[in-house]
Amino acid sequence: MNRSATFSRSVTLFRAFLHEQDDPEGFYSVLAADTVAQLSRWADLDGATVLDVGGGAGYFADAFRGAGATYVGLEPDAGEMTARGEPEPGTLRASGEELPIRTGVLDVCFSSNVLEHVRRPWTMADEMVRVTKPGGIVYLSFPPWFGPWGGHETSPWHYLGGYRARRRFVRKNGFEPKNRYGETLFAPSAGAALRWARTCRDADLVAALPRYHPWWAAWVLRVPGLREFVSWNVVLVLRKKG
Ligand SMILES: C[S@@+](CC[C@H](N)C(=O)[O-])C[C@H]1O[C@@H](n2cnc3c(N)ncnc32)[C@H](O)[C@@H]1O
Image (cartoon, rainbow, N blue to C red):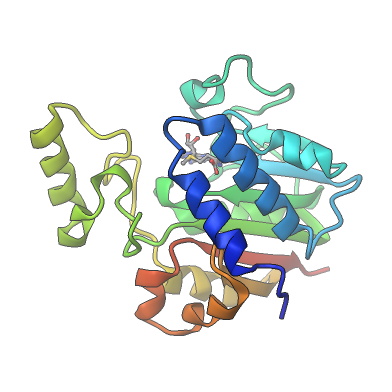
């Protein structure tokens, strides 16, 4: 049991989330530093090549480079990629469902908060395993649909159904939400993620945890049903067989 995930670390993350909209740089610097520290439990990042699938504008790039890694972003959406100006050098424009990368070449394949935006999430997860080297690490995190943030800006109305929540948002605001249920937002569950990871032929599941919770609350992910509502964000860490 790793006890570096303290309650005060969860409070720091929660405070940063409150400023995601008005101070994205500040929010992402806290989140990226925390995520890189978390991932370092399983992967030696110094000298590693890391692919950030759905990396958007590359908010995690500096934290990975700071840990000594070579960072490569991958993002299908040109608007997301350039949201902070010029994209990170070497960023690939492609979908995680079909990675334009040879099999078994990466030390770390990383993805944060992307699976819920992908129509075929487990195809993307399989692709991430494929491109990772034997012994390399796959890190996948996403907010489960029935969590408080499952519906993104349509939350908490997603509990009444994704399409209904989307229609309500349009009625109230006069425009579509950025994350449109059925188009750019889907409903992956923690249970489905764990089933995928446990049956993955080419990689072993080495950790499954609620990303932002303190260590002593990690048990919530072991309880079917409850985990969908209270884990907020699920992290799966797999090691490629080889
Ligand atoms: C909520 S943002 C997350 C960005 C960043 N990874 C983070 O943690 O902040 C979701 C990202 O997933 C990207 N995305 C959507 N569909 C994708 C796909 N099929 N393959 C890879 N990325 C995708 C979006 O364009 C967007 O940049």
